[in-house]
Length: 71
Image (tube, rainbow, N blue to C red; front, side, top):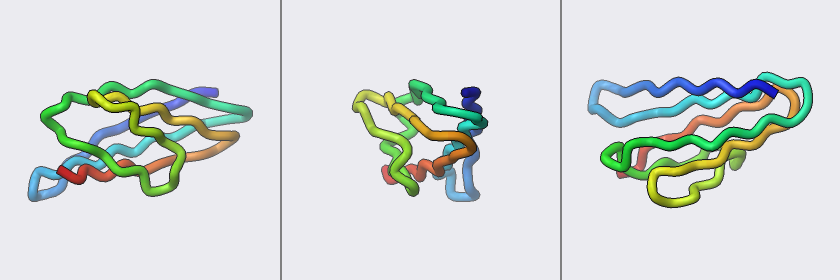
């Protein structure tokens, strides 16, 4: 399936990453983020932190995850 991602920042400069799996079926993507962004925490458990600014998103059908920068 197709995966899309969009990075946003709040007024304090903290980043939020929205990742969507746009089914049907399984979707997976490897995301590489600049390490100066800090660490991100998954809110749904669909994204695994691989270390070194790398994350793996995996979903089924229509799925999503918000990653919140934790610095």
